[in-house]
Image (cartoon, rainbow, N blue to C red; front, side, top):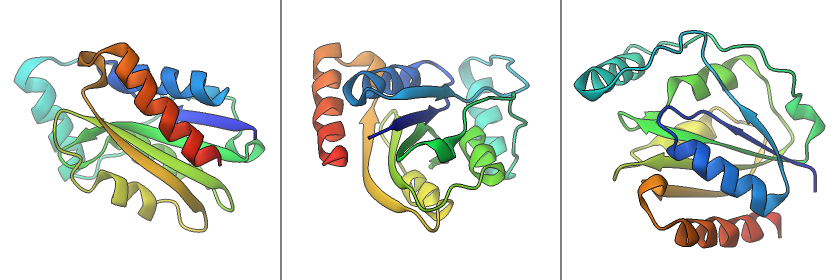
Length: 159
C-alpha cells in the first residue's frame, strides 16, 4: 500500500516519530515547514505556540512537491500545542483537500493530548480513519521501545 507520512515537528519529537513510522511502513515522508522558522525557547516558546492556537493563526507553509492524492494511506501528525494540533498541521489541512483516503493520525506531547486527535479528524471529513496514536515525549524514551510501539501500530493500520 503506497503510504505517505506528513508531519510537522518543532523540537524533534514528531520528526523522530515520523522517521520511525516511515521505516515501519515503508513510506514516503513530507515534512511541513513554516515560512517563519524562527526558533523560540523557554517560556517564549509556550506563549508563542499557545497564542497561535488560541488566536487560530495559520502560519504560511513553505512549498512542497508531494501530492497526497497519489497515496492510498496517509499518516498525518505532529506536536500538541495547547491541547490542539500544531497550527502548521491546521494550515496544511486547510489548504490541501484530502478526501476518500485511509488516514492514520499521530500526535506527540509531554503528557496531554487534549483534543488534538479529535480536531485533526474534524479537518479530514470524507476519509476513513484507520487508527490513531499519541506518543508521550518519544525523544526522551528508549528508542527501541518507541520503535516497537510505532511498529505495532503501523501493522494494525496497514491490516
